[in-house]
Structure formats: structure tokens, C-alpha cells
Length: 354
Image 1 (spheres, one colour):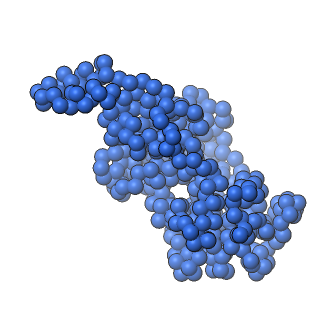
Image 2 (spheres, rainbow, N blue to C red; image 1 turned 30 degrees about the horizontal axis):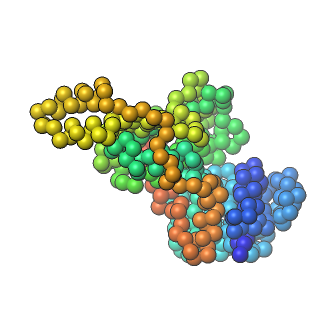
Image 3 (spheres, rainbow, N blue to C red; image 1 turned 120 degrees about the vertical axis):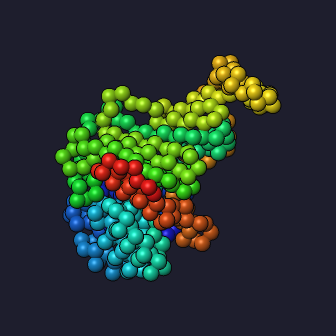
């Protein structure tokens, strides 16, 4: 069974990625219609075999959608999503879900009131680099982690935001663009209470929006995570660095084939754990000097597979009643609250108690 999809907005992301994903044989959806205010985008939808509508009212009245995907500029997400749910349709919006928690909470309330599904296109939960890092942490490759660093540096960029992403009233800026993906990954990985959020958010080249952000989150357990995103950095640091009580690991680039790991050898660690307590300092010094394994990649046999299309496969399972929704509204709201805390921390120069 193919579930029918209608698009609100038919820009590059929808007409390219979303439509291409829906056309896969292993994705149980079929694109049937689109609404866009731009006649050129409506013409593009017709060329792709869709029915195109020039008003939202006509699009919603036509009906027959099992899922409506909202792919407009961020400032229209709330209105479009709520109107679609009120018209009786399940909804997925592009990330970021909204510009702020007020808009997001309204969408969640509308979902609860209407009984319609609401979710967000956080497809980067299926990024191979993220899945490998998460699996390595779960497998205890470096013991208990105490710091997780996630970065997106763009050495080949020019520092410029573009289109509506450069407009503040449209919900532009790097923290809401790339940052929301990176924070979603970290918060999906670390499901524990947050203690504090501190951040530096800058507008280095853009006139209206942020183009650099560094956010540090501390959790109740003592674990910390740092997310950094910048549109242009002549020297790019590693995509991931993770530090634990048994070693450390790094992945240099997004999609890199291997995780570089250095850790204390298992046999040496076990032997010295049994030594007398008074030898503790000597033992730890010896660990650092002599008892290090170095290898390029841990065993990835258990690393989850899939790809970005797995999000649509999960939605198909949810609509069929066979799967639980992976990208949950409560998780999206938690991430949005962290983003708002980051803006507050940077604006007021304070650490925000979460």
C-alpha cells in the first residue's frame, strides 16, 4: 500500500530530496499534489506529474492525503502545519520545526487536539558518522564518555547565508539551520536530564542572522557535549571527538570510513584494577605511557544500517500501525528549548540553568 503525500511548498528540498525519496521502491509513499505560491514552482510540480494548486484552500479541500509535508520557509511552518492538521491530515514539517517554542508548542497542541500525527524531518539521525559514533559509545569502546564534541566547519564555504536563511524574520541563521541537526543528534544520543546550557552565537558576516555558534550542554550525570557550527573556517577541526575514561576517538570528516581510536588495553587495565589502592598514581601513569591500543576502526558489524529514507520508512510503519514514531514531538521540543537557551546565554552572557 502506498500512502499519498501532498506538499506545501515545492522548493529545492521538496522537489529534490523529498520527492526523490518518496519515489524509491522501498518507501511506501506516493506523491500526488503540491501547493506553492510561486507559479514557476507549480509548473515544476506539474512537470513531475503532480497536481499543483495555487491556493492553500484548494490544496486542502482536494484532500486525499495520508501525509502532508511542509517545506516552506521556517516562518510559515506553524501556520501551514496547523491548518493541515485541522483539515484532517497527518503532518511532517521540514527542520527546524519552528522559529521558537511558542510556535512548536502550538503545533504539538494542534496535533493532540485533532488526533493527527505531527513529526519533523530530522533525517540526520541516520547519518552514517553519527550512527558509528553512537554505536561506539554504546559498545563502551572508550569506556564512560565525559565529553562529546560535534562540529560542522566549512573550509570551502564563503561565510554567507543565502536566500531566506539569511533573513531573521524567516527563521534563518546557522543555529536553526545546521545547529538543529547537530543538537538533535546529541540529544537523541544522550537521553538524560540537562543541567546547564551556555553558548556563543555570533553574526560574523551576515547582517541579520547568526553564522557561528558554539553550544555547551552539561547533563545531570556530569557528561558534557559541545556543538559548534560555522559557515566558514579556513582550518576545519574534526567532525567528532569523544573523550572517555578508557580512551578517546575521533572522526575527521562527515561520512569518514573509519573512527580513529586510542584506548587503554583491556588486559593491562584489568590487571592494574586489581592492584593495591596505594599504587593508583603509579598505575595511571603507566596506563598513559605504555598501555595504549591504537587502531583505525572498531568493530562496526552492529552499526545500524539504513539511510535518510529510513525516516519515511518509519512513517510508513507508523501510519500502518506497525511501528512507533522515531522522531517524537517531545524530543523536538527539548531541542528547541536548548536552542532558545543558547540564544539567551549568548545574548546575556550567562550560563542558563535548564
